Image (spheres, rainbow, N blue to C red):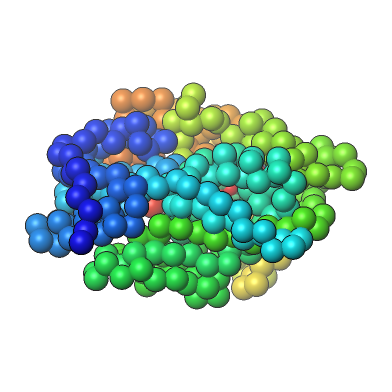
Length: 340
Ligand code: EPU
């Protein structure tokens, strides 16, 4: 027997995306359990509605009108399964990520403290493999549980099956139209393992470090550089850091000796924020959008703008970077519910 669940019509999503873009969902549901989610999917299949999944809304650009049904999983239970010195941290997809990190770090568990204060839901974390200060969530993930939109089946993927890459996973690729994540399971540990490779971070953490102290330092750095979406609408980094060939990186470095570059598996990773900054764009304002004054990788929305205007603005930034450096930037936030 499946659960019944309320499906609302014509729901305003402008407060459910941190870019604050105007958006209406034709239908909208917030299932709190797997059986409620399956009930929504049954209805979507019988009505032939396209399904669009929304998490914390902190990395998305919604279409002005989203046809079909927008599903935001609201189950948010968390539990720790202690196994000696390590533990499995189970978080339902609707759990708030920054709250989860803070509670885990405060309780003395190491693992996710470098990912403090990243806005969003636990279920969205593996989708783009959130990362900051030398850690990506994929390194901590043991498994991800999802419901398949096609047949309501509940499936479990191991970390290696999740295909994690830089801001990438199977959930953005082969499973993008199918998987609705309902739970993530992370491995955390009592063993001290502070990852302080970032100079900024190392400077702010007293030794011996605790997970709570690292989380607090990461939060401080983020507050310094990144706008709080509750005060100034944004979706964090708007572009991915591009990877270029060794030859390209060396040629650029010859002209720009101060250009940050980091070794990557398939070449050299450059800092998109630096490239945009060097085009003189930090702090620019155009219409209802602008580039943040303290981090050129972040586009901010001052209100009353549209997804189209944002897209035009982002394209103009990418075009200036391409002109100046010959590098094509790739957008990070995902477009939701557009028909193209
Ligand atoms: N830089 C500039 N000007 C700027 C911004 C950056 O010159 O306006 C330079 C910095 O001085 C630094 C380099 O670029 O040398 C890298 O900057 P930063 O350390 O601030 O990190 P990032 O590469 O711009 C990435 C992630 C962030 C994450 C930080 C910290 C991406 C797309 N972004 O930013 O993630 O918090 O590293 O690890 O990988 C997000 O994805 O939304 C996000 C905020």
